[in-house]
Image 1 (cartoon, rainbow, N blue to C red):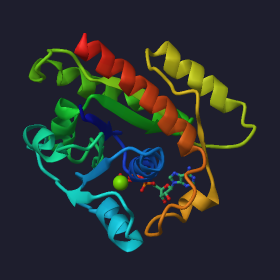
Image 2: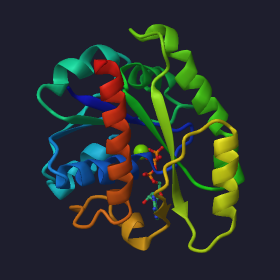
Image 3: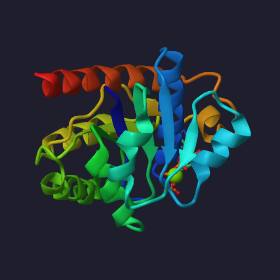
Length: 213
Ligand SMILES: Nc1ncnc2c1ncn2[C@@H]1O[C@H](COP(=O)(O)OP(=O)(O)OP(=O)(O)O)[C@@H](O)[C@H]1O
Ligand SMILES: [Mg+2]
């Protein structure tokens, strides 16, 4: 069974593409067969894939019909990772990705502006429930990204997210120059994303188990 993971956030520049790329590489490094889908018309992930000549097959599909096409395209792959455009500019594409997703990964910086705007992401996730075969919203996890070493605010925002009902991964992604400069090059080291991928994998196994039961 293929697991479809959509990387989603409301805002532009919230580390969606970075998260999709590093997660894809980390899954590949873990021995999984990964298909990468760039659903953002900006095409940044596809450019990264082409420039880096990375080993994961990567296709562009910036369409509102993703939910009808993804399962067919998934073939024998273990995981499909979908990078999405900002929800506030391309709601139709993001909604389609949410309809297809088994798990939604939401990268969020521990700052007031990013955390406050997650309620719109929650609404978008809940809104697709009625459009999905099971009538339920997809599972979702927030990943604290671009965190600053030793900043006390990170734990405060983590607690705020949990209070708001978000499941937040234990693994965090620091703001790192190596990640900021990574686009376009092969990803040699997945760094903090290895732990993120491992947690995400555990969650997807639970989802698979639940749907098989
Ligand atoms: N952990 C990190 N450390 C340092 N820089 C980061 C980190 N994660 C992302 N960035 C940088 O933040 C910027 C935005 O990241 P990215 O392009 O992945 O966001 P996005 O949500 O895909 O943006 P868009 O909505 O425009 O597609 C990029 O310059 C990226 O290199
Ligand atoms: Mg992007």
